[in-house]
Image (tube, rainbow, N blue to C red; front, side, top):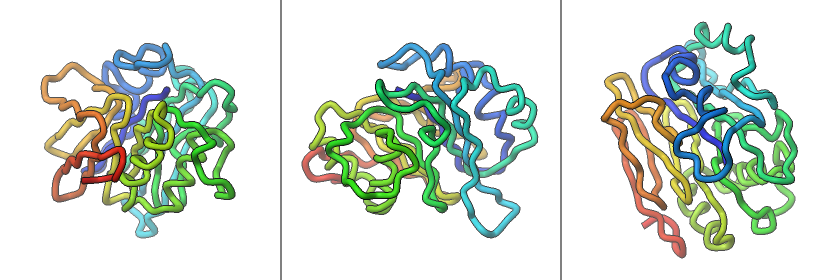
Length: 237
């Protein structure tokens, strides 16, 4: 199991999302508060962002197989990194999966950044796709990229029906749109004046976090936040 966080809104420092809050992803890497599976997330971390100063809309990443709490170089650079759209994650590797940067979220197809918080049986995923790693999360990401993010809810519902033990909390963003599924674990929304945070668990104890019900799709755009129930047999309702 892992923890992840997404941001869509005005440009902010990466440190303000990932490092500075009292229960930030850095703290969640060694002391998560709502994690149902596993005690910590020490098997790597990654931060992906889009550079609003450029027009290429290219997804850019910084990933490591080491624990986030021990990365002094990122701690030094994060206040200088800024973006309007971010996907970040800390990893607790599924048993038997490799611990390496290529197995660490966020994954990308060049346009989207994607993180998976959960586990899935690789046997239910299609073969032959170009995945960044042999790990379950990377193969799931390749499946989602191949089917398209517009079909995210349907894809998650179909895979969940094929693997009843799967936990399929997915978080993805492309610079102007953020999508997430809640399937077997926690996700919370924070609607700020300057944007929206989606996170596996709140990064502080403020009262205005909203918990998303299980088996829902969340879409965040400039127009607001929309929640859609997911039907395990049919996909989005």
